[in-house]
Length: 221
Image (cartoon, rainbow, N blue to C red):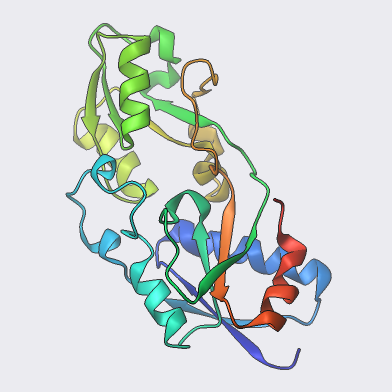
């Protein structure tokens, strides 16, 4: 336990909060746990234009971190579980997926209006194809605007881009201490959340059995 574990992550405020959450959980089992954070810029962090709906299931937000893991530049990686690619690279495995802290999609709106109170033709910023399709099914009058960027950038766009509302993961707002911005946790009957929403994933090299066993205390699967 005297060693420092190198934890790879994206550099966004939310990603750093996610690492903090994992560290605090590990320290409940291993009080002397030591670590350093290795911030890594992914292509997804640099490309603020490509719609999320076009890259879902790919390694858009994980590729550079996974490469660092394979090169042994980090010991393990912390990801938002829903950012995981459909296919994990050879040589890597998921040691743990935590239980979700909140699976809901959240509405952030001007004047704190709920979804059914938004004006006719309201402009709503959303990222995933799932959210876009289900919002239009609920109210065909909605204008769905593609939105990218971290949570802070999306909240800024609520005013800057003249939007009426945003759909973001409730867990992201919770982790950032922004739960007061939630106008409504949207019922599952309206928006079906990603099955891993609110969970974190810890990725390691497959041959590192000791570390896999060390981390499995956090596995909520």
